[in-house]
Image (tube, rainbow, N blue to C red):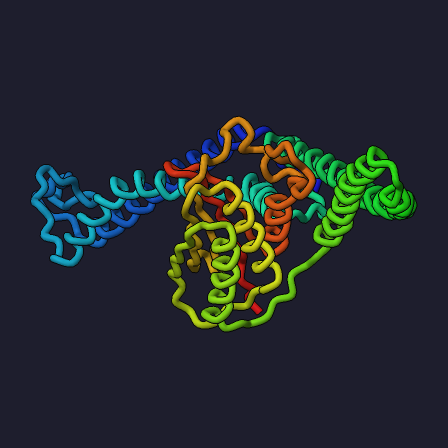
Length: 392
């Protein structure tokens, strides 16, 4: 039995569907014939329960005696009872109705049985697999032993899952190696930089003006390298950071973000406008993550804005959405897809800015269950940061 069932699972979907439909069409035909025969039998039984009536013809002998039961030479209509007459009419209609009804029911039954036996399990496996992959969970396997089209699809999906798992494993290995390499690189550079700073101090004390000028130039480059090394160390810590959710009063927290942004804008001679569309009083979030993103976005905006910056807050999809708009030149469309990559910047002077601001913002948003989206608007640029609230 199991062998027959297993071989049936290997039949191609098209052939399997034809077999299901054919089997149930035959079943519908058998049921229709059986129903018609049964109705005819019942009708004959009802008619047989009434005695025959009419004129009979009898054979007689020489003495005038009747021979046999006689034969009817004319029949009179039989008067059925009202109940039997209705029953006969109903039984005459039933076969006419039964045939399309059986056909419809059998087609539905064939479709349901085909879905249960051929489609339900592989579709369930594929849906569950898709959901797990969307959640970055590759620690599973698809088990559907069949050689039909869906079996082949499940097998292809399993191959894709295995390949993804290997690629992700390799990618994370490379990411960890890069982090370790950056950390080692940053650590190993600190000692020679300390030595160079010592020599630079000695050169600045020289009586030779040209030597002192050279020492000042060296000091700027050494300072830049120290800043770069510091950014590498901070970036590694941020890549490993995870949010610590706390339920906070939203109004005072957003007010503190606005006040910090206002100070930065005033220092650079920019006007700051606030749009606060939040309505809840509390939210479970990591304030450090959001504060750092807000500060980075404001710092970026004041560098490129002409006059005004707009800071907006609103609740969206069970989380906090923060957006910063400026009236500057906006982003170059040709490099818009690159602006969140680490160490990418349009500025030629990298002494202070190494192109990590938007990458750090993107990193913190994603760790907080959200996203960072960059848009060009008619009068500048807008950066939208979304932070998912914890359900705990």
